Image 1 (tube, rainbow, N blue to C red):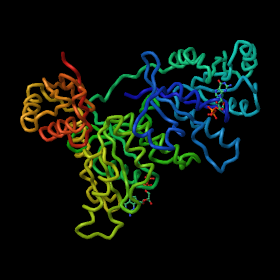
Image 2 (cartoon, rainbow, N blue to C red):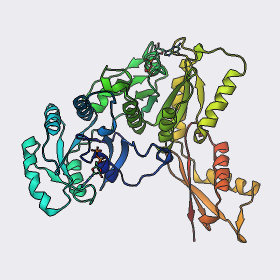
Image 3 (spheres, rainbow, N blue to C red):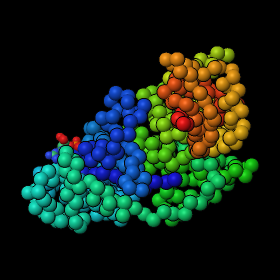
Image 4 (cartoon, protein in one colour):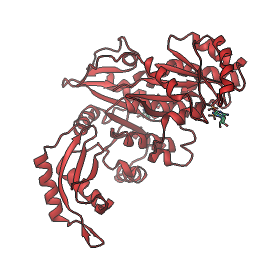
Length: 436
Ligand code: GDP
Ligand code: GDP
């Protein structure tokens, strides 16, 4: 589940984001469809051959007011902290610069594998120039051209060869969840409350980087939980931690690593753009989602307040209609004790399997209740359905012609499935497929 992380570093204008986009490919999504988001995409999932991994463009984590050298220093440190393999990008056009040497010095301090990519090698003649980059001390330079799309395959061959060996997938049964939200919404207060009192912390030390940042605990009922990236929540006081880009990147990583995501908002501040971005990512990644409204103690309430706030959240996060909403206070501990149970329930729903016979009864009842639509005199026929995956539950519906299955009918079937079975907190996917 914990995919390796690759970080791209290098001074500005060497071609980091060009390379990032090329490796990321054309993954489009509702999140990235939002204007302004595509441009500053800095985190993505990607794959090469049979390897899946995560990719970070550290150049996108800019600390606007900091001097140039501080910025590139911080970016190199982020790469060292976050990555399993680092791609250090330089440019054949300019040769070795002072900034390149500066970054190299920081990267020497890390034990992480560093692969040197010499970009802008747009023609054969320029290949002769790459040898000067041996001087940076990272072995053989890999010539690439972002604009001509050459050399990237060879570079990725080297990257995946340096991935750490897979660690044993222990904790298969543990419930993996993450707590995400903007700075100051109360994430660490919630963590401390959850980990306090009776609960036993099993361990937060072990061999791999991953284990060191996750926290395991057992609830009094004996359920095992893994809180993902607890270290990222407990601040270490580094400059870049307060930047929005860094916190979004960190949140996306945590979402990728968990099955259930607690999306924390506050009653005082409501919903911001960053919240929508991160929530959209969780939805697309197919994770279970619980919306936690913290600091419920801070606002004046009457009998309508909770309903009004809920309506506002539903309006803003329409695609998360399945997510339960809980109003809590980390300060007074109000309703916090409900969280472990809710996380467990959502996790169960997220991996729920429905036997085909039962599923098809529900589908047949649905067809009887609401006749299938016709288009140009042709009627949609639904033959049968089957569940093909969990986490999230994914159903294939076999029909005569998928074109005839209008979005609204697909919605109707999804709703009937939701009515019949408990899928609270989890997205479900319905795929239509032609059966001849
Ligand atoms: P970043 O600041 O390191 O992220 O660099 P960008 O990816 O934004 O690229 C900086 C500039 O270099 C842009 O104008 C790119 O079009 C250009 N560029 C990127 N890759 C290449 C390449 O392989 N060859 C040439 N000639 N230009 C490139
Ligand atoms: P994080 O940045 O999301 O981890 O947020 P923290 O847990 O550090 O909390 C930020 C601030 O909000 C701290 O001063 C907390 O004491 C305060 N805080 C957290 N939860 C609550 C709450 O439920 N009610 C009130 N009134 N303050 C809270």
